[in-house]
Amino acid sequence: MSELNLHPELNPCVTLEAFAARAGLEQQLCERISTLLSRGIAERGSAALVVSGGRTPAALFQCLSRQPLDWSKVTITLADERWVDNQHEDSNERSVCENLLQNDAAAAKFLSLYNGEQTPAAGQAALESRLAALPRRIDAVILGMGEDGHTASFFPGAQELGEALAPEPYSACTAVTPPEAPWPRMTLTLPRLLASAQIFVHLCGDAKLPVLEQALAPGEVEAMPIRSVLRQSETPVAVYWAP
Ligand SMILES: O=C(O)[C@H](O)[C@@H](O)[C@H](O)[C@H](O)COP(=O)(O)O
Image (cartoon, rainbow, N blue to C red):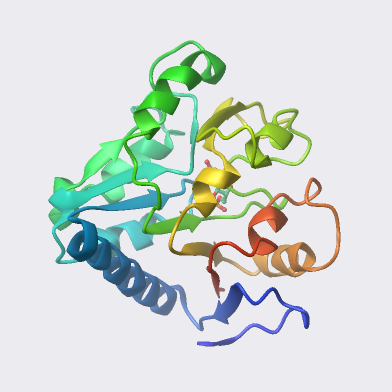
């Protein structure tokens, strides 16, 4: 593991770490998340974990699923979801069920972002109520990043991006129509994601490094919405990258 020195004036809330291999990244990230969840259980009797979809986290999920903690006291939900049912190959919930809700972690509670309404907008109010069951502060949030600089479903050019990033009026989730990515989405909002003890940005592959470097450089948040996470000063953010 080594320092990633991609930008001199790095936000003091953000750390960047490069790993020689994905296995080393996944092991460290798995241990840190396990520690955060165990601390939440010890302090409050329960813990909450927000994970992302996409291709990157499957091996991390499998490592987490074998962590020996009291998963029956952990609630897991997604940072965002494609508006498809959980049997669909593009469903993030399906990936969580197949890779994370297994082994020891099979005992965890999962809070689905998809509720069968015709559109995310139609399902938003009911989901907002369901998300109220989450603790005020999430113990750990795992985010990914697309090569366009999106994270969760904060897509550049999405007409709902402003609503997803706005601190007020508060909402925990919002519907998003990505200009290019498939499927309408439901995403947790930035305020909901930032109300957490620790955010991890989990990146793999050489293609993600220049995108991260550009995201850390000056520029509009709307052009690379992951900047909203990298520039805030409320929540510690650890960026982990492996080739
Ligand atoms: O629903 C999604 O697709 C994710 O939540 C999204 O934000 C993802 O984290 C990035 O697109 C990275 O995806 P990869 O891990 O596949 O590169």
